[in-house]
Structures are given as structure tokens and as C-alpha cells.
Image 1 (spheres, rainbow, N blue to C red):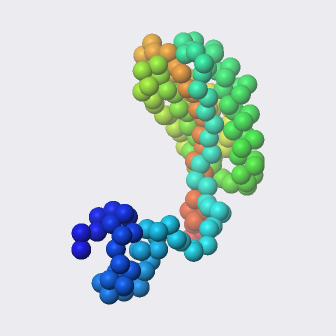
Image 2 (tube, rainbow, N blue to C red):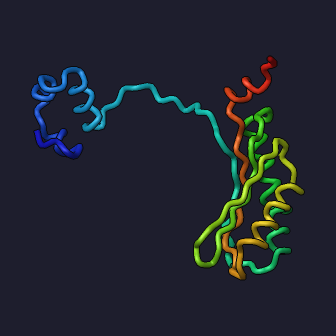
Image 3 (cartoon, helix red, strand yellow):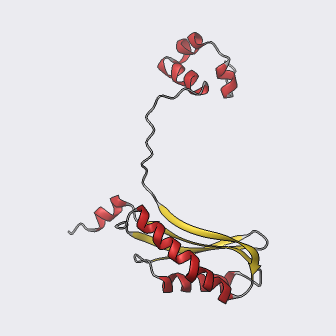
Amino acid sequence: MGLITCADVQNYNLADLLKRFGKFGRVLWERCQGIDEREVSPDRLRKSVGVERTLVADIHEWEDCEALIVEKLYPELEMRLRKVKPDLHIARQGVKLKFQDFQQTTQEHVWPVLNIEDLLNVARQAWQERREGRGVRLVGLHVTLLDPQLERQLVLTW
């Protein structure tokens, strides 16, 4: 048939697609025409929440990174987490650093309670072990949320 791209399907006869593919032929043709009558479902299960800042100038001192986390990133992460749903449970917490050479590293730890001291320890460890003297141009914090299915299973007793 020679159908490789949507443009190929758009230019193909609908009747021939129906003969060849049945009901799926119509679906294929409609989607390639930009027609999709399926209901849009904006509700989705959020898997993570995060905040990050790209800096105007690279930072080279841990104290600058720590101040950014304490004064800006952590409060914003708390606020976003409350907005999403205050009763969501955390599976992991982590820190992201992007360096002046655009390489990045992420360090996480498993801990169910959001705590600034824990995140600062994770950030400090990543800073000390992975920075290798490079300037840091982006700092981020994130939490991975516990899957509600797993959460339900965890409370089962045997």
C-alpha cells in the first residue's frame, strides 16, 4: 500500500482503507485528518512533583546552593505538593544539579516524609561527590509519589 506517513494516509481513499483495514481504516484516516472525538481526560495520576531554577550565573560555593534550596526551592516544592494533594505519600526525594558543561546528575534517597535537612544532605553529597570543581547552573528538587495501588498493598496484613 505504501502508507508510511500521515500524509500518505491523508491522500489515500477512505473506501480503500475500509476495505483493507475495516473499522480501523476509518480510525486511521480520521486521526491522520486531525479528527479525534475521544473524550479528553485532563485528570491524570501525578507521579512526581518538582521545582528547579536555572541560574543567571553559575555558582561555585555550596553556601549559594544551600541558600537557594532553603530560601526558594524547598518552600516552592512544599507549596506545589500541598496544591497537588496534601495526602499524597512520598516514595523518594531527590536533587538535580546541572553543571556549566551541561552535564547533569540526580541523587535520590528513599524517605517518606518531606524534610529540608534530608534534601540538604542529599544535595550536599551530590555537590561534594559529583561537581568536580564545575560551576552549577541549575538546581532542582523533586519528590516521586507513591503509587496508590502500592500504597494500598503495603497496608495489607498477613
